[in-house]
Length: 500
Image 1: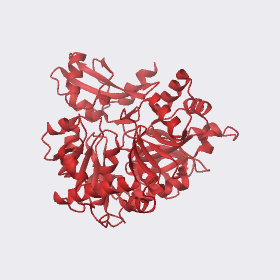
Image 2: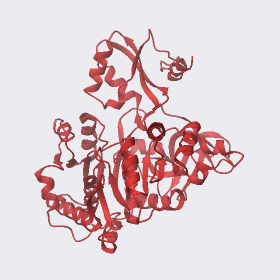
Image 3: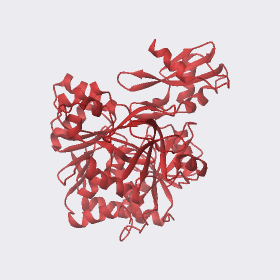
Image 4: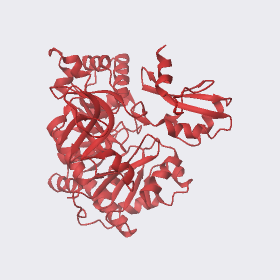
């Protein structure tokens, strides 16, 4: 079944129910949301888009994001959402690798893609092509798709920094949505989903269950994360759900205290995407009340590995409440979670090892990458690359990562990707990029550099190649990188320097 059928059903049952908002202004009810998506699908078909084709979305958060997304699904195609924070060159690789022949864009991002060598047609949502989309002959209903058919091609990076396309199927998205109701939170037609985090990631995926429930979808006028704007919108709408990285939660707490706001109207804040320190979530609960829920997931099993529900986040009576609050909760209903060796051998409760997941929310593999798929899917299990401990009560605690990925402000940065850019400078002989602990962002990107290149030159080089959030916040000069007998850089030793 095509996931878009849920929108079609809601539009038929509750046509006049408010659906899309830009700030406090209503853009469409569910009948209008459905009609526009159906017209976009009809226009895509006129452009030759076939079921299974990939169509990109390189847009900032706005109501048209959801119209484009559901229009792609109505046409039977697969969406390729690209993080709006990425550099045009990075977006180019994703669009080329996915085989997307067309990409929906928003102002400021259209030029970034048009200036690359990506062979795609850009449809700017402020342009004439998109206006034609909205008035095209609509499809009669969403094109049938089998549960195992591709719905969303999500690009994540591996340890090499080369993006891999996670194949997310219609079954995976439906499974995730059902698990949300079972393990994370309930949604009613009187609720609102607020999109302050990128819709190309978890926030956008969470639109699905809100469509199923007939909730409203609210995009901030700013197009992103602004604490005061969030508080104003929550107070106006009254029953707001939102997805947030842990750093966003801590910034909301700090700003709410400064402004004297209590977060009125915030019903649920689901946090994920990086480490949440116990002291920070305790402070947030004390200030905002029991509105927080934690989930743990990956693109390979989107938002559906574990959950720590609000009663567990707010619990202070259980003798082990701190340990549980430091965990990422228990396995969601639709998956099995175990700890194992890198070879996929299961370990007993209490053992330290790699987190393994299996179930209908797990990907079938990476797009056109059988080698990476074989390394990640072992004996039916998803090898997450994250290390942790599963206690006897089923609570999973993340301990460290087997990969060198840096998580800064909820965004993933893969060191080798940054290193390869820095090594383009003729005065950089060697470089190693690691994460340094940061009070607000969780980690910040730091580069250890062997060579004489100036900081400003390195910044300019990064600006021309990679997204701003991936650029090192500091360049630390070093005579030589520490290495083992095999010549491998000892990043652990570099990180230890931050503890001295």
